[in-house]
Length: 145
Image (tube, rainbow, N blue to C red; front, side):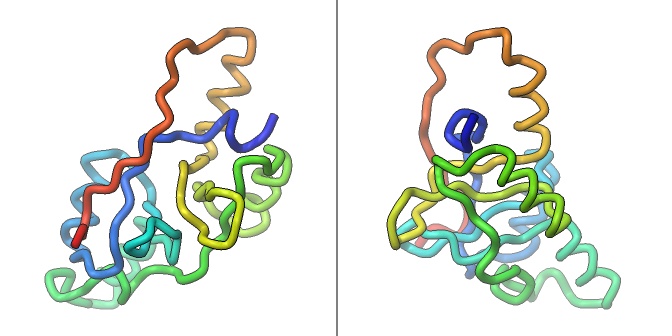
């Protein structure tokens, strides 16, 4: 099994100029723990997580004035669609992360999905079943120019 078999394709991504309040709202409403940050070409340039925002709150920062670029982790771990699930699990385990962006093969790093811990568990629990009609699209909604 590889990343393509498990990844979620309905991705909510943000640009680095999005406001932290906007991103926080999307995280809460979408029940996400984090989201990829992309450039104008759809390439992954960072990731923002709930803990990044919680640290800003703890440090007394004004969320109304912060942009994603102020808090995001730059150059996050990413995998391509052919990466074996065991390798994805190793990355999650070693880095203590819950979600890994999946990018196209090649140099541009264009996002095609994400894999979360729960995606892997769901796939493992459902391996005796077949999903028909799985649509593979990427949706970006926050901070679009």
